[in-house]
Image (cartoon, rainbow over all chains, first blue to last red):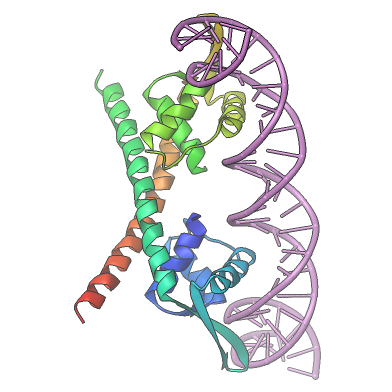
Length: 110
Length: 110
DNA sequence: CCTCTATACATCGCCCATCAAGGTATCGAG
DNA sequence: CTCGATACCTTGATGGGCGATGTATAGAGG
């Protein structure tokens, strides 16, 4: 699963949200590290809904329609699996970091 | 920088290698977590070489030609930057993990 | 009153990364 | 002498994500 999808599920894991809010929440919670656009998020949400990972309900707030997405149990399970997969990746990244630092040290103390 | 590119630089950070070896090294060091194909790696190595991130020398070992790639200083710097960027991402992933575990706990102890 | 910005949804074409598949060539094993 | 491993490379196909664009409403500011 792509990092974007991971973070979308991650923010919806905190609380139900509508699409526009998801875009901003991902941007904010990742400190701009991952900032998918609306053109990325809206199709993604539809895909998740079609797959049963999210359920959507419509609301009208101040004349503006909102589609609020909530993680289903299937969605939560998928997220758990994604967490495990990405943790493996982070281990590899941290290993890369460690070796990079090891080299730095050996260069500083010749 | 993509994870694939990151891991390619990462394995070349340990020692110089030829392309075929890079493919296997990435597969192995990431425990299959990231396994780019030759169709991904060879063009990537050429791109890195063209950009001055890698230097290549040709060798002939047992009648078979090898192109051995070595990280340049520019390549090492780029890797340091990539490490920093991906560490930010790992922080976000770990935050996602933490909240997932928090939810799990709250479900187990209602 | 009108325009501009923010909110909120959606779609479409484009690009780029990646993959699968195929092509070439050498070597050693069976 | 064929098959698998080594070693390189290229070429479609695919799919994710981006930017642009379109629609509509609310509220702010001139």
